[in-house]
Length: 169
Image (cartoon, rainbow, N blue to C red; front, side, top):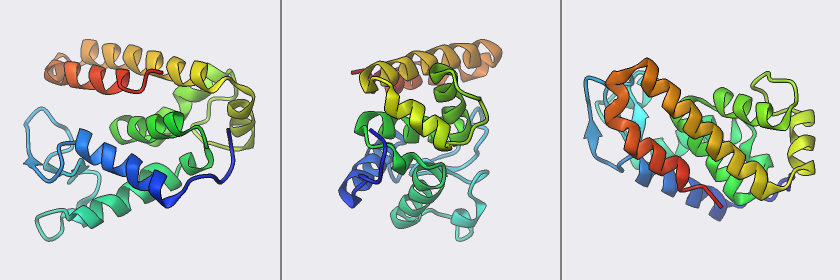
């Protein structure tokens, strides 16, 4: 389950799916979205360099997703396609460190937000379907707590839950 089996076509599919889930090229700027202006899911607050010319291109978005949300955190080292895609998607919404921490809690390894050798070994030793579905459950719990703490985010609840549940195997 762990190794260097990520292919360019796998990366493309993961990023295509994230861009679609994020609404594609449409620019949004909802007052309840702490990221500010967003295009292809790339927020101005988190990625001001991509917004320097007032818009984000598809190519810029793809580069950011691959660098910051797939290869950067090490998700490309996970060969179980569904788990890899879910961690990338969860990293886009919550930050890669949070995605890794939730995974580490499930695996009962040191929770440090880094996808190091011990976490990778624990992934390899786990049933990939069980692990993936446990991560879905963890996401749903986290989403519930977030909306409870920040009721203004309620408008996103249905979409976030649907997105998390789409990874269930």
